[in-house]
Image 1 (spheres, rainbow, N blue to C red):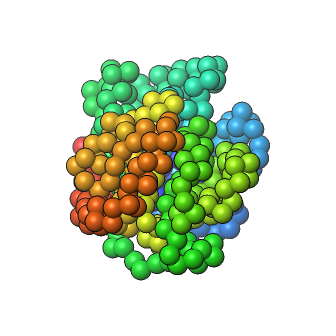
Image 2 (image 1 turned 180 degrees about the vertical axis):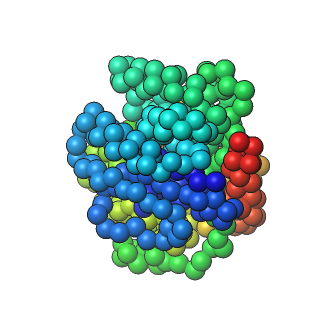
Image 3 (image 1 turned 45 degrees about the vertical axis):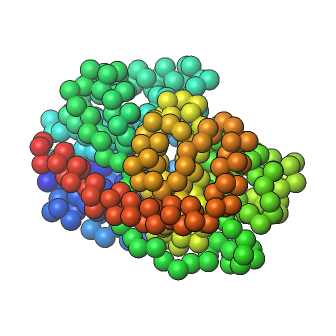
Length: 372
């Protein structure tokens, strides 16, 4: 089967798209991807996956960028004449739906988040309404819907009266932890400084400001390292300067997923403290949680349903209220004050990684296509 995917995003950092495309290729399917591209440098490591890239200027307004992408993507997807079309997220669904309808072939909607409930849309009712109307119209054409967490799957199912939404979680390919001191080496940190890590997007009101506040009351033997980028980067760096936390809070530019594991393995504790502004965050089950487990990192996660379930099942960390810097600070202090407990969490994380990995999750995706 020829499966043509549509993506609006940067393939260099989209590990989910990479995993799914490689999985389908290995199962004998032909996979092509129509995607935006923000960097002219060649993409490496995609193997047999056919890439058709649409250059996009990230500095432009999305009100102009999206229509440009949709027009170009529709033409490329039509030219592919695929046996099935796979839209990664709502912002790629329209061109994929148009191509699937033209050729009367199956359409897969892979919802990476609860799109209409994103934090960035909470206080923007007009734009939120646009996306809600688009999703409600296009989802009628979808043959199978995929979601990243049980709660998001249930919400989409109830909202649109869907018979089934398949859960395919954001689990990384299994990798053993590697000896690494990469973060300390790059930032010039002393060997005995303990690293508390956040990796991911710097998104609107996602909890990073509260985490930075929490470090205002922690000792200088701890370093909070944020690996990533996003629309809140300038504001977060300003917060660090204003709070005079430059010797405790550090920023590392976004890292391609092929290199990220070595950074993660050089930390001591992973933070997955996403605020619940918007149900997309509240119901999320982020990549980073499982990437921390894969590196043997204990996790401090938001006390929200799907993340709490993983922490309780794995016994690999703690949960906290992401809106409360005092509680976050207390949990971090307690973790480092008890070496025996920290060691137990590390061992539990490594054991959990044997269960929470893409090799265990991939059959769910393959079953979607086997059942078309």
